[in-house]
Every structure is written in structure tokens, then in C-alpha cells.
Length: 173
Image (cartoon, rainbow, N blue to C red; front, side, top):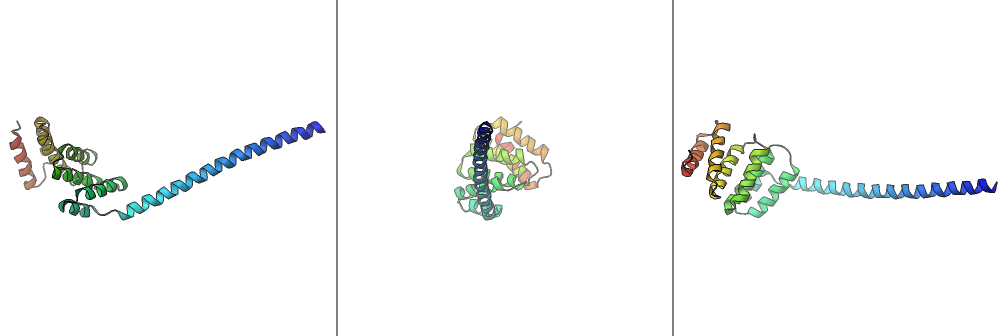
């Protein structure tokens, strides 16, 4: 009988230890879920506070480049679809305003590469070519301008004239 009691006490201790471990895991899961829900709420409030692309364009045009960039980066982070390509284009444009051609080229390339059917994709290629020209990468700029003509033959006459002017300025062959 004593041996059975000891065996049962051992089993009870084992069950109590296992129960403590499970409770600790449950507490960890609860803490993790609370944190994740708080992050979702924060993310949701950021999404709700995002301005439209037009508002960021106005900021760029009025010289508020850093504020516009910050907003556009949030826009890219939280929005979906081809509008991200437009946001990348305007980021590139904002860097062109300051003469930061390498950064401008990076964002123009992202606009075209990741969102080739967005409405600013042809202008992104043109912006990339101009950036490359200012970075003394004329051969690459010329190949981008050729790609622009092939991939977007239906762009407006005004856009065609601008790209032709760049092509001539670069003396592309």
C-alpha cells in the first residue's frame, strides 16, 4: 500500500510539473497574441491615416520632399497593387528634384520593374534614363531609351518628344 501511495504521489508530482509547463506556454501564447493584436491595431491606424498619392504629389511640388517621401514609403508599405508603382515613380521624382540621381534611379527602376503596367511605368523608364545620364552611364541610358520606345510605343506625342530629346542629347546610336 505504501508503495502504491508513493507511486501515486510521483504521478501527481509529474502531472503538476507538466501542468506548470503547459500554463507557462499558455501565458507565452497569450502575451504573443496580445502583442500581435496591438501591432495589427497600430498598422490599421497607419493605413487609415495615409494620404492619397495626389496629396504626396502636391507635397513634392511644394518642396516638402522629406515629408512626401516618408508618406510615400508608408503608402508603399501598406497599400497593394499598381498604385505602389506610381508611389515609387514619385519617390524617384522627389530625388531628381534634389539632384540625388542614384536614389532617383533606384526608385524609377522599382516602379518599372515591379509594376510594369502602372500608368507611370513609361515615365519611370524615362526618369531612369535621365538619372543614368547624370551618373555618366550614357550607354545604359541609351539602352533604356530604346527599351522605352519598344515597350511603350503608344505613349503620348509629348512623351515621345521628350524621350527623343534625351536620345539626341545622349547621342545614342
